[in-house]
Image (cartoon, rainbow, N blue to C red; front, side, top):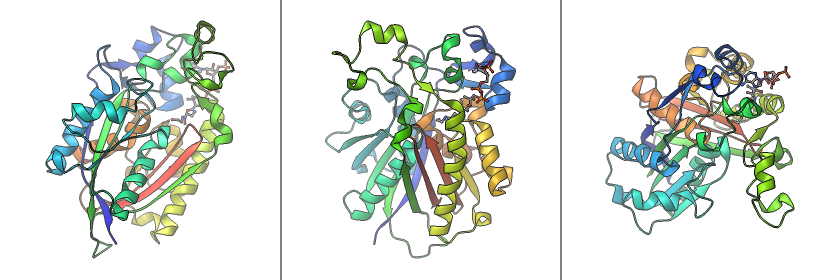
Length: 337
Ligand code: UT7
């Protein structure tokens, strides 16, 4: 049976750094509050002329280069995002021509902060089935254009940043599980009864109005994300622990066998609590939230690229990832780099 392996990765974040001090000029907040509650010191926000697919393009180009493939070998494009260029078509359709690719399937994944691991799972299944051989998976977000930057929206606005991360996932045949790079497993979960605890209501056909978006929705601020922060936080810790342990058990891997943990970055305190709960040495967790904030579907592939560049992620290492986000959705994966 075929397996899949990550053969290259890339990332891109906009040049414009927005510090906590910058935010304190837009809304009632402080650097200390943001650092103490979330660990975030700064994030990147795009300029007006940059879209989500623009960020994705740069991350994809780096991933293709690092994979050492000709882009014509890519036979499927997967794009995880919750902040697309437009309402429809999907963002993979906007990215495909920018990459100079034609006709290959262009598929969007809408699983928020878990989107990248959901995308890994889809890619892994496509490759195992024999349907596709070389898949480009990108997670990218432009959150800055969709946040309420007034004091009313401060609980959400201070957390999110813009960025993109991409990987090339390719068919491989595993002869030695202990040595060969490959994806061991992905585990995906969701609990839609909590959908409105972290969501963006408008535009939407579920608003009970004749239009998906009208001036009353805008006056109410329904176009901005809203969150029940404490509930999301508690569920994130619980569910990430659970799905991580399940991934380890399924693969008969011990926690101490994992060389690096690449978790989603929603709040530094969530990852510190995970470390405490599971007794993971902090130096084995690669965190990026301090400089990028939460970049949702882009977070884990940005972490991969950053970790490679920092010399923390090397070929042959056993890696575990877990994520939790809106939906609620959560997911985990174990893979040999
Ligand atoms: O990626 C998807 C998953 N997302 C997450 O996992 C996020 C999970 N939640 C969190 O990270 C945290 O709940 C937050 C960082 C969002 C908030 O931290 P918290 O410790 O839960 O604070 P809180 O919401 O209970 O707010 C405490 C106080 C409130 O004031 P009062 O009511 O005590 O007077 C808030 O109004 O802090 C106030 N507050 C702020 N103050 C300064 C909320 N946001 C801010 C802010 N600056 N940006």
